[in-house]
Length: 201
Image 1 (cartoon, rainbow, N blue to C red):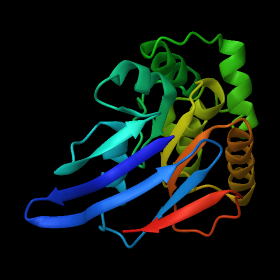
Image 2: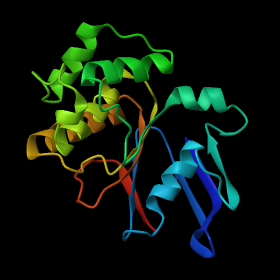
Image 3: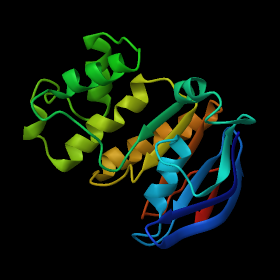
């Protein structure tokens, strides 16, 4: 379970949100809603441990995320809105490198097959600088198929995707929930996933 207690976030002199509380059990998902600039991305970064709140605690399975950071990060897969890809590398090389840096070894056939599932057949060996925004987004999302994690935290994962990629991603999120996974995401579009809750910042 992901648990948040009395969380407050401030940027400069502006308080983005304060006193935020929620509990998110396994097999459920949370839709973080709100206008641009309200603090959605800041909340996700705090939940991952990449940013610090002014006050409050975040716990994963009853333990504060800072106490067993390595265990938490093994369970976590975070995809930010502005995901980093190396322009000169291919999608296959980018994914192989990023997985290797986290201690996961996947062969080129496995990585290529995952890219194919996300509609990138024929693009796996093309430098990323030649890919469209939607194709780059799909390269990043392919990590969901390759990197085991119980908690997915996804910042605007549907941005720049066509209808087929949206349907495929929705299917994969549903499958993750069915295997007792947990998902936190932001999105400006309505979602039709079961077993969810929403908060508005």
